[in-house]
Image (cartoon, rainbow, N blue to C red):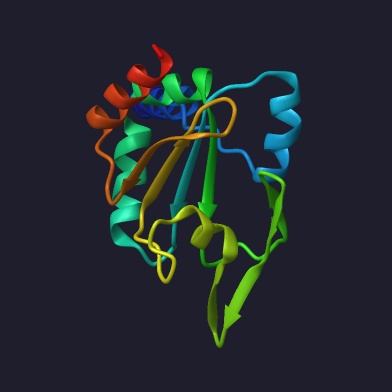
Length: 155
């Protein structure tokens, strides 16, 4: 019984100590940027995208990457086809565009180079003044992301 209790406590402590990327929203971004400007990472994904799920799992496993993002960037995780709220970003208003049983948010189309249908996952990295500094379609491997983010911080 003692062994079971010790194993259980170790397992619970591992879950409690594991850190995840802290995701914010576009409306929070306006407030946060007034206090302190940082580069912004926008991750567009969908719930049906298997690569998005695998990528998220792999990125959150990398403690160094998670810490880097949480400390030096604002991170917005945006579900492009389910987010239905009206959003304000870079002085413009964006709405959800329904299409039968599905739809897409105008902001996803505005951020994507493919204006008809974005490629998921999609990563947009903006500098502290919201200028595009990096665009990445498809899976972003943890080591590649760390390297890119360290380059951005050193600019």
